[in-house]
Length: 510
Ligand code: TNX
View 1 (cartoon, rainbow, N blue to C red):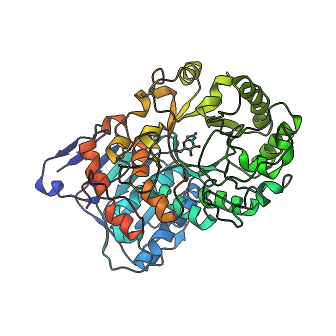
View 2: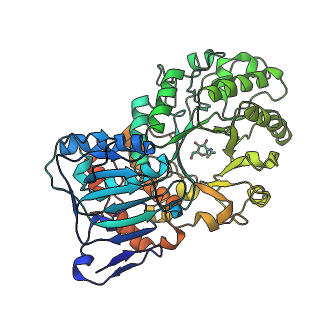
View 3: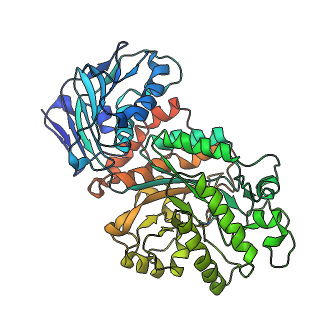
């Protein structure tokens, strides 16, 4: 008796029993191969989480931390393999690659096989969705804690599956950022991009330029005041928190535009030598660093140097978008001086796609955020060998309103309902940018209108899981009619997790 959800995404059933809905048909993102087995596994009070590989330790601890409160079980993490219970080990099929895993659920045990820590995190995310939704509760619930019998083999379509949060327009505390990291992590998101500077705020302490946060980190959109920035210790704590969940942080400092907060902090960053007033509105494109002053590059180098020293991830995001107050020639001059500085401090450059017109460096990563399906500079870069991160604003900007009645958000790129967010193929979207040119998918969340975790969640859910599906699942699985019920099946889990999601009428919520 088989119910096969193979790479084709087609469901094949040949018994009535197999046709019964199980959580096997409720996974987001959809795995590459899912074969059901007849018998279920039940997690019991004596179960141990057994490590067959040191790579699995952090993923094991994450799983234990999710399941201990809800089950009330001790769930010790141990290096001793006894077989029964949950076993995390290596020796996965090479097809799983650097981020994939195999998950085998039999009556005696659940085995996650992966050859890397990333693979174990991804396998654990799948296992969590196979347990009943109440396994996500923070308080003790009644079992039984069943997992449907299965044999799963899975690996991602793209390496980069990202989420961006703008902490500049509105500041979010470390606790709020951690809450969002927890929420995105469960969909196999592996990059968290923090937009740390903009006209309205400079959000990370830079020791050599202390006024950046003292002045530039003192307010936000709407005019609230306070300590609206992260100390370097707080930032490093966020990075560790993300790393303990399989996520690499990408810091962004936007330049040469979107720099009013810096220009309000230091007079010398302005061509006329005068400080700008702090800005609490939501216009874009009015600020620019002074391109022809050496102090500008001293400033930029100090920022890159300090940030690189405390950021273990390989990337520095230099923004580069909407530099509407920087003449084209100046923009190129600026990038020609700044790109080598990022290399000097050992980081790989990523940025909003505009910057790629200034460089032939094929290691640089443009993040496409346009609303058209052609971009000559991005296509030319792809032809040279650059890998592109896809964030088309009219598809996957999480701050776009769902419909005209959505109270939060903006609409400059259009209204983006759940089906619109799903209805595109990252590997065949931009002219001249094919599957092999795409590094992945990232869902940015700009926060001009968002002030709380509830606001973040309303805009990100369910579209962030949509982005995760597009980034992870094979293209052959892409089908709205089959995706919508899987997405809808997440509803009870999100309710238990306290996620304030938008219950779109396009989705059949469970
Ligand atoms: C455009 S997207 C911007 C941001 C805004 C956003 C609002 C991009 C690279 N720049 O400055 O916050 O639109 O949707």
